[in-house]
Image 1: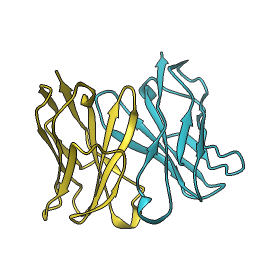
Image 2: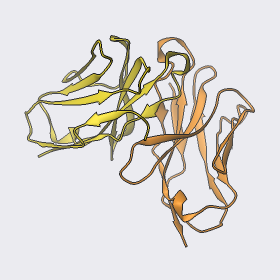
Image 3: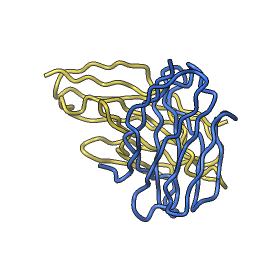
Image 4: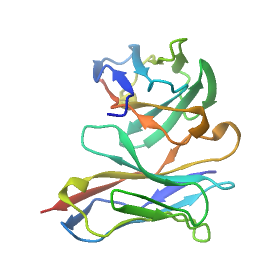
Length: 113
Length: 115
């Protein structure tokens, strides 16, 4: 158990809909990262937050957004969903002094029908 | 840009066989290098890491050496077990500015170990 929790574990929805994925980092970690794992694109970095502020963006679509709240949990919002958004979405967290040592949650599997 | 290339799988071995999974990278500057493992139905776990040239990361019998001259970070284990069956990801983290910590992953190599 990494200490990072993600909910829900599975999500099935329809094209055009909007969903919210939630992540709680390890206790004390201020940095949160979101990754997408799909069969065709592999594992891709989406976005990073540090103590409530966006720090870096990767290959995140404009239809996707995220935020980190004062209690440090983070949410990834996916809107106008397309079939190709079906994937595993991972959240990871780290301490500031070791940003490249990240602890991953179990992931949320999103299926868009 | 930054990228990671690792050998295609799947790799199937018998228990106690020697394992090598090749990984090469392209990066600006001096990245940190990692191997992550993903067991079925689980998230990724950090297996080992190396932060500078000639460093050797090791954990649970696995090891990998950061070779700057060949831009490689090959994963090895002398004697695999059935419990090592998983998908292994090579990754790098740029060590500059705001990109530090934004892991760039290879495609993953699925390892199956037969008893």
